Amino acid sequence: EDGSVWVLVHRRSTHVSEAGKIASPGGIVERETCLPPPALRLPGSVGAVIDFDAGARATAVQELREETGIVLDDEQVETLEELPVGDGAYWGPAMHRNYCARFFGAFPAVRGPEKASLHEIKRGGMDGIGDPAGDGFHAWVEARELLGRDDLLKACRAPIAHLVAEIDGLPPEEDEGVGEEPV
Image (cartoon, rainbow, N blue to C red; front, side, top):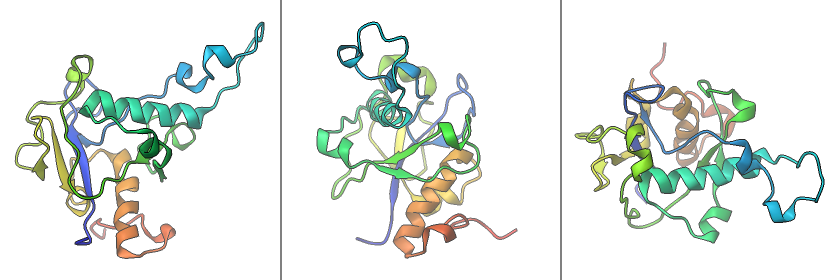
């Protein structure tokens, strides 16, 4: 209501690529998540049809839960918004998706990463940045503040800039430079 977009982020640990960068929850889409459930596969079929978009959406929901403890209900999963992919996507834009779950009113409770995800996120890495999410790992940070930071993961810039441009009322093709300093 104040014209701000707040993004849940954490700092990546030294045990993963892009160490020390601020990033939103996410992960790699594995082949198995792109296949239909075994019960729906045809018996004797050599290869199942791969649905990368369905796998990417399932991965986004899973990574959000594993890294933050936030569990989306069916309606929230159905209404996940796909955001643009910009420079810095590890596998390139064809094999990368960005999703956004919108929360209105109070921020959801953030319990923190599951044990298997602890090595990916730096405890205290967001201290002094944004509003602490309460788990010691994450913070809610205003999107414009994130775009002004040098330590924001490059792959996170385009989707966050898109959200800011949406609030500012800019057309999608003009949102790429939102929040960036002129060169």
